Amino acid sequence: MEPTKIPQARAFPTSESAWRVRPRIRLDDHGPVDVPYDAEAASRFESAGGIEVIEAVARRFPAKIAIDDGNVRLTYAQFIDHVYDLARQIAAATSTGSVVASLVHNSVVSPIIVMACAFSGRVLVPIDASHPPQRRGAIFNQSGADVVLLAVDDEVDDSFLPETVPRIVVDPLSTVHAVRPPYQYNPNAPLFVAFTSGSTGHPKGVVSGGRYGGEALRHFVDMFHLNSADVILGLASLSTGGSRDAFAALGTGAKIRIFDVRSGGFGDALRIMAQEGVTILSFVPSALRMILAIEGAEQAFRQLRVLDLHGERVLASDIALFRAKLPQTCHISITMGSIESGAVFSWFVRDEEVTGPVAPVGYPLPGRSVMLLDEQGRPVPDGEVGELLVRGAMALGAWREGRIVQGPFLPDPDDGASRIYATGDRMRRRPDGLYEYVGRKDRRVKIRALWADLDELEAALRTVQGVAEAVVIAAGDQAEAERLVAFIVMEPGRTLPALGVVRRAVAEETAEHMVPAEVTVLAAIPRLANFKPDLVRLKAMAGKAGA
Image (cartoon, rainbow, N blue to C red; front, side, top):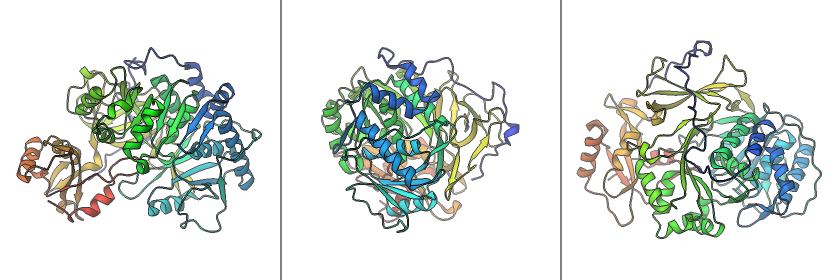
């Protein structure tokens, strides 16, 4: 497929009619406006950086539990002491400008590592210890790391690491009384390298800085009114966005309860939600569908006041299900963005505005302006589909072999602190200002010389009675010779209807050429650490068990 022709930075349209910003709608509109929180403290995430905000909270709540992973729990005072101590060790083992890699599971050690690296002024490249060995090795090879951080008693296969690379072992149970290291906030300094999900097998590094992270944390706090009474369930790993949940909690005096749902399972996640009285949950809708299908699951959500959906298209049927299962007082929000751009859209769902099969993703966030372009690089009018371009503070660049490169970002000709990024997302803007996600450019493929949209095909398959989940891939080596392969998960106790029924349903909803050549029923869709479908594994399965 030919990429969209993106004009040079100086040629970008700058008129109000091309670049759209958020209308005068508060972040908490139709959200928890009655919940008190410290808005002034939230603003300091941008002005002073997250570290100083968290230090202030620790001085205010030294004995309060800050973080708990089920094995270790730390008070705010203990957490800060461990941060100071690890920052001292990192500074002693490395020099200014060094790169630090971490190889840990999702635990209390994760936020200690992030904050300690920021304190010491070193760039952190986190590697999730539960990821496949091939991915871990690929990320380390791109990291350029001078030292690796490990967690004590953490069973980790580090055989891919060179023996010459120094290790620092973090022990959260040790008793430390550390002195605060020297620190000066630099909003433009690189802090953190996150790697894309690698759903196609090729993870790419993206570098974030203080300005980018501080803005995201402020939005998160202002939107959800986070406060010291909240309990946030941290399901995402450090390497796939979990740091946002952790540091928003730590910066507001809340508690972050870390849980690795990949190893613990949905049943344990429900038990923890009930025991802890979780009030804030950010998760992908497909996983929530499965969780809420468990008998009695809604009891675990009885304290939930905000459910934030992200990472996938949110169906109108999802909203209906969650409304039926969650407390009436629970607010449902949708957030959309990417590792490269950060969060771009958000809103608290108003059911009357969900008029189609897919819920809108919301309005642009403050500090973001967006534009939709056609294949010739021209702005599209409202109601028409175009590729999304984002403008604002975002990642500093891409990460290649231990250094920052420009990557997919274009400079903003009007603001040196801003960048422009072509996302590859196909969207439309409604006349009321809400944006709808249509699909990914790379999910449009040619089948027998005709375009097929894999997102549309998945949506059609979900209309078949009894189908709970559906993922479609295009298999084959040549674009014109590709075939569509569907993987389906059925609802408990249901069986797949006759293939003729499935194919007729798809043809009626889409087009004849989009009928899948193969349909395979799975017990569960294989997923990556961020719960997106593992397309590499699915492609390897194509043709082996087709129905």
